[in-house]
Image (cartoon, rainbow, N blue to C red):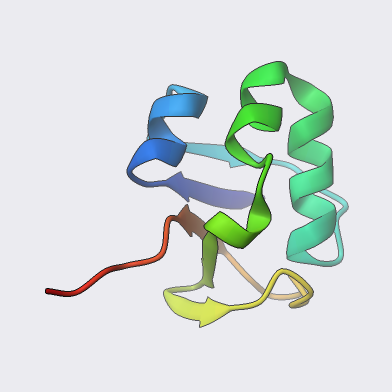
Amino acid sequence: MLDIYYFAWVRERIGEPRERVETGAATVAELVEELIAREERYALAFADLSALRVALDQELAQFDSPLAGVREVAFFPPMTGG
């Protein structure tokens, strides 16, 4: 089981701040493919992966990162400073 967290406009498009999912995905990219296959709202949220960042257990990661041993995945837009 994975806890998935969505932040900012990703949360708005999906309509939930978090969910728990059962997955057979080996990488973040495979997890995204599974989510997109579920419903249109996920396809909208993940339409442009270059506009998203991902963290695994609160550490920044890449979409090709493995999910083995991971308990928490977070998706969010790039952070901006000012």
